[in-house]
Structures are given as C-alpha cells and as structure tokens.
Length: 308
Length: 312
Image: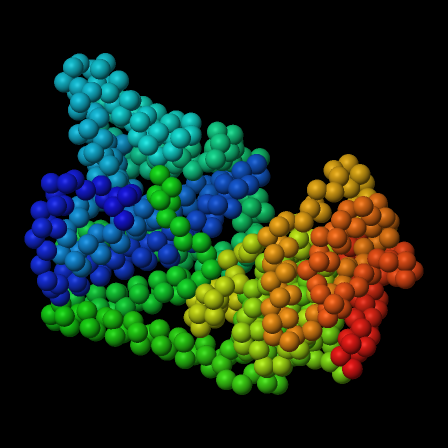
C-alpha cells in the first residue's frame, strides 16, 4: 500500500508503529468508513469511467467532439477516483490498526489555480518533491529566473517519475509552465472571478491528463483534435462496443462522480465530522453492498498508480 | 449511538442486503445453478454473454441434462444437436474461442459430471493460433457473479431489452448458435476468393500452432481419458480451394495434433478425398469457412454416424 502513496516519512510513521495500541471501536468505525469510501471510488466510479476512457484512447483516430470530451473527462475522473480511492483504502486500513496516515487528496478538482491544485493533489508527493528537490535546488531564494528553473526541473522530474515516456515529461513540463505563468500573473495583481478561475484550472488539468494517459504524442494530439477541432460533433461508434447496458450504467455513475467532486464533504471531512452516525450507518451499508456488486464482476481492477 | 453500535448496525445491514440479493437471484435461477437442473431449458441471450452463460451452465445445467459435448470455435457453434433425436448433446463451442477457454469449460463439466460420456472436438488452426482467456469471463468468479453483480444486471438489462424489441435469441437450449441467419446473405464465392488472395499476400502466419494451445488440447483429451469419456475429434472441413492452397500447413497441423490422441480415440479428417464432394460444393458454406445450414446439417448427421458406430 505504501508503494504508491500516501508517501509517509520515517519520523511520522515509526513512532506510531512503536506505540501500537489495541483496536478501538472509534478508529475501527472511522477506518472502515474511509476504506469503504475508497473501495466505492475505485470499483464503482473509477472502473466504470475507465471503460469509457479506454475505449476513447484506444480509438483516437475516430473521435468526434463529444467522444473526445467524454474520453478526456472520463480519464480525469478515473485517475482521481482510482488514486484517491486507493489512498483512502490505505488510510482506512491503517486507521483501523490505530495508525494515522496523512491525507493525500483534498478535493483537487475544486482548485482555483494550478498551485492550489498541487496543494490538493497527491499532497504527500508534492511535499516530498518540495522538500527533497525544489528546496535543495534553491527554491525561491535565489531570484526569479532561478525560481522558474527550479519549478520547471521539479515538475519535469515529477513527470519522469510517473513513467519513462516523453508524454509524461511533457505533462510535467506543462504543469511547470503553468506554475510559472501563475507566478507571473500573481505579480500583476489581477483578480480573476472564482468561477472563471476554476473553469480555466479544471480545463487545463483535463487537457494535460490527455498527455498523461495517451500512449503516444500522436494519440494525445488526436484526442485534443477530437475535443477542439473535430471532424464531427457527435460520432457514435467509439463507445458502441461497450454495449447499451454499460453505457446506461455509466450515466448515473458519472452523475454521482460529479456530485462527489462538487460536494462540500470529502473522505477526509466525512470521518472528521462523525456526528450524524445514524444516517452514516445506512450510507456505509449501501457503499458496501454496491461495492461488492461491482467488485463481483468481471471488469479489470488494477490500480493505475501501481504502474508508476 | 456509539461507534460499536454504528459498526455492528452498518455491517449487519450490509450483510442482510447482500443476502437478500442472493436470495432473489437464486430464486430466479437464470443459469440453473440451484437445485436439480434436470429438465431445465436454458439458452445464452446473445454472443456477448455466450462465454459467461455457457461457463455457468457447466456447473449444473450441462452435467444434469447432456451426455455429450461439442467443443470448437464459431466453426462448430452452428452445429445443431437438436437435429439428433437419440442423443442429448450440448454444443459448448464458443464464438472466437480457443482451446484454453474450451479447457476451462470441460474441466468444470467434468468436476460436476453426472452424465457426460463423450466429447466431440473440432480441430482447426483457429483454435491453436493463440491461447489464454480472451475476456474476463470463464473463471470461478463467474459463479459468484451470477449470484449478484453488475454483470448479472447488465445481462438482465440485455435480456429484457431483447424481449421488448421482440428479437429472438439466436441460441437454443442445446447451445447451438444460428448465425447462418445473417451469414446466409453473404457472397460465398467472393468470401473464398478474398481469403485465397489474403493468404497469397500475407502468407499463413495465422495458422501457427501455439504450444500452450496444444497443451490445452492435450489436457482436454487427457482429462477425458482419466474420466472414461470417449473422445471424437474431427479436422474441420475447409473449402477445398483454401485447403489445397495451404495443404502443406494443414498436413503439419495434422502432424502436430495427431500424437495427442491415442488408439481409443476416434479422429477423422473432413478434408480427405472421401469428403471432397462436400468441400468442393460451396453451397455447404456461408462464407470462406463457416458452414451453411445445409452444410451444418450434413455435418451433425455425419458426426452422429460416427458416434453410433463407436458408442453403439
């Protein structure tokens, strides 16, 4: 579990291991809640969205505009629910054993700028790269140009960390570039309305995930062409191989995923605020039942981040 | 409410909910998994669900109702055992299947065997060109999926949709798949010529015998021997021109597979001069390889003759 995240420091984890206490019902209940939320995110949402994303990225040459957007948004949803589901499960199991692991996600798609995004996405990796790469390189202490250089090196290495492919490196470059643009923008002191800021940030992240997911640059460009310069608007052949039942199943799950992304609560706050236990009893039971029904199916269930 | 009560209540609710789902699906018994399946009639609803349904039938439905199994890819899937009055044979062939997948079916039938006495195996390079499961289906997990899973609800969705559209299943209770219905419209001569041209241009790489596929066939035959199940195997009749073009390969294919069988097995070849009148007559085909209704009817009767001669 610790291989992919949350990345946990020795000083944080080992003292807890040395002071292991007997199981207690509060941590068991909270841990189980977080674990079940993670399981639901993974097997219900991420694996369902994965079918759309895979179908789209496997047939990039034929994507219409709608198919291009469905493909990229599906992957944007998939990677978040897959990886945050994974870390929720790790955090939940650890909590059941009285070990508190750091939270790794904090509603990243609500970010209002790219810096905000990286303070919410894979938080432990961001901290790791900041402490062991960005700051040793000089951080922001040695003038503006060197700061930009350090940001770019950190993000390109972050891209390379995810895979030995130029598409990952380019993804890192785009994020580094966006961080530099944001720094320059902040200097101008201009404000952007919150909704517009969110819209720009989310779409930037969505577009950059295309490079992260595509097997080649050609595939990435084809998906982006489908999104922005399509040959047709609707198309219709790319997802037909999934079958109508799968497509109908995807619609409510996509809606649930949007609701979860926009919800005020996330798995961190769900356990922090454990006041209304009675209502959460039913939520937990439903999460378990639905997750088991999905888990008991034939769809592949590999975690994306196991590849990185 | 204490945390202990929260845990107990939520887990109890989850278990009760899951048990209810299993009770409902168990009572519907869509795949004949529950109780005595003798006399039941079950058929896959579509090609998409063929692997899943046929694998689930191997637990109870096939062992309880059939004495023989036909094993092959789509080439054998259109053989209709309903035409044989005195034999109860299930066509367990899988569209696009290979020997790995057929082995999984046979292993499960034999594990739950009550009545199966013989296997009829189609031998064709299509079955040996690759190995391994081609989908997520055909594993022990399928059994649990049939008791409650998203797969099961997708299956019911497709079933209800088909019924509402008034479209009938192309399968029957013997596992026969009537794909001739749409294949009949094809121009056979054109399909054969296209296949000949393709082989000329691209060679016959598609005919290679994969070692694992060979091992899977051997495992099927060995399993039959160990369980006193008679083995009938036939080399599938390809249209004469295609066989002739690739004669050298087909002979190698023979040499590779023949040693798997022993003297007690009944193995024959539909491509010998004895059957040339059949393979030269293109009305027996609906494309470059699949048999037409006429061809499939002749073939199942021919198989019956062999069964009758050996089994008495």
